[in-house]
Image (cartoon, rainbow, N blue to C red; front, side):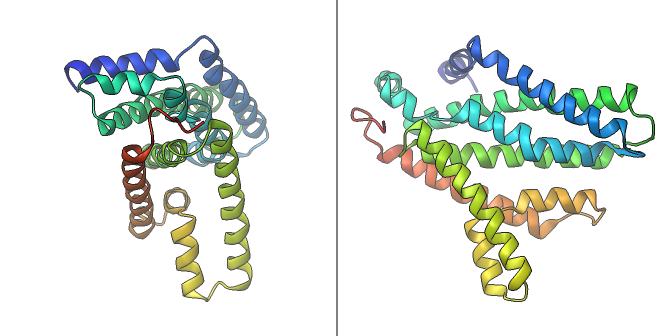
Length: 254
């Protein structure tokens, strides 16, 4: 990343990190620290990778992605920032890459502050039982956490090309609820129906989440689940890059 794109990336980071935004990692850090401390204090065995999974996948990554990424495109269209950028030698695709990179960087920073540091501190100083720290497994699950963050940010970018910020959150929340309820229903009553399972995996891709579960269970490298996750990420990115070329900059999406 050189020249104008590097400057645009730094500019987007400054636009994201307002004074109010600084409270996002701090607030999530307090929440996760309380959860880590409460769980670790009463657990006979503290598995660092498993507790990292329970906190990051369920709360830190989704909340940070939504708070930093909501209306990432729609807001720039509404206030004229995207129109101003396109006057300069910046393509829509380059803008989308830089925008998503700035949001992704913010989410990674928040994960370090709210999802990693409290886990390390609790495991070192507050756990009375046995601490299980498998470095390879810890690194593997955190690598998949980053992929899950990229998937959520890509979905938000796609939605933001067509919907206002509030509707982004509503649609994403509805998607999560449907994914959870339909997956539970199919697993309970139609577990042997391969076509329903394939359709569920296609509409509600959870390859990265399943990959984390497989890694924590010691089942080796979850190649099939990772392939589904990468496939979903590629599909959403392709739709997002197509959408950014179709939105009306002057009219806006809000």
